[in-house]
Length: 119
Ligand SMILES: [Zn+2]
Image (cartoon, protein in one colour):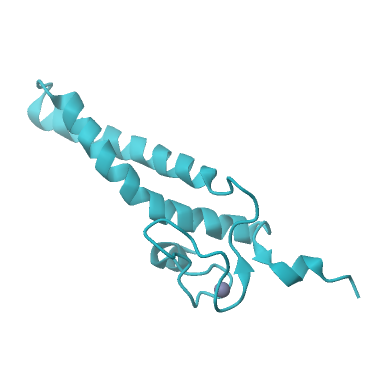
């Protein structure tokens, strides 16, 4: 899980990259055919995960800055700038992790896995 998440690889086969751009996913895995996005808004949860992790990271940054320098003028702008950098950096691994868990839970699968009649 950790390897496929950090490398942005397909959770089903681990062979191909799932990303077609910085944040945009391919429609399907070129190696095994898993369709990554089943419904519109499938990855809103990844945004929430990245935001939550970003809040924790900015809180940790605030704690370090306040303990080191005390409350200083402009601290809020430093934290806003930190959040503007941290959250986008976390979005890609959060999206890959979101894809992994939705695959592990059975929400992401190949097109022909559920469309063929039971035999
Ligand atoms: Zn695959």
